Length: 110
Length: 111
Image 1 (cartoon, rainbow over the protein chains, first blue to last red):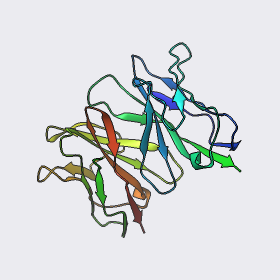
Image 2 (cartoon, each protein chain N blue to C red; image 1 turned 120 degrees about the vertical axis):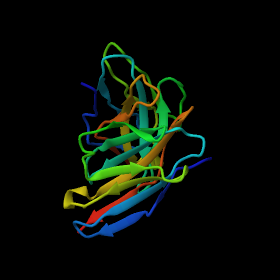
Image 3 (cartoon, each protein chain N blue to C red; image 1 turned 90 degrees about the horizontal axis):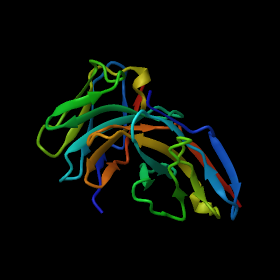
């Protein structure tokens, strides 16, 4: 079954501290993995995707196929990072739907 | 940067009424989607649309739902007879060469 699991509903981190948002997935094949961010009352925005291997706003995520994980990390949290973060996967087909995790609310404490 | 536009941003409707949610995808995208997010829950896939027909739909997308691309630019989601449990945020998305772009959503409240 295709599934994305984000075990933490809420993560509170002090400003300047490292952040790690956990994501594990289940998919039989080679999925594409994403992180989306949703700031308060705004649209879902693509934060990063594993195939581009970019670092956006200081966030990185490494796909670990052995552990089927795609954890999101940032070395030093900033207050503007407070948002809802969704890990997601898409299949190998061109028009495959995206399957989202339940999301983790990241709250940066001053 | 091109955007996916959704209207209205908020719709309140009475139970049993029909609603049409509208989306204008990015012009050179070929794949279109609707997702919904019930308050406090995850974003769920409803339907995908390609080449003027549904390519995949979820079990949520029952006979009460339909999609259309009436004029080559708009992409609509119709709910024929709304139920209280249809209250949610509905997101439209389109996909091109560089991945998905989501709209800002329509908040549907069924009373």
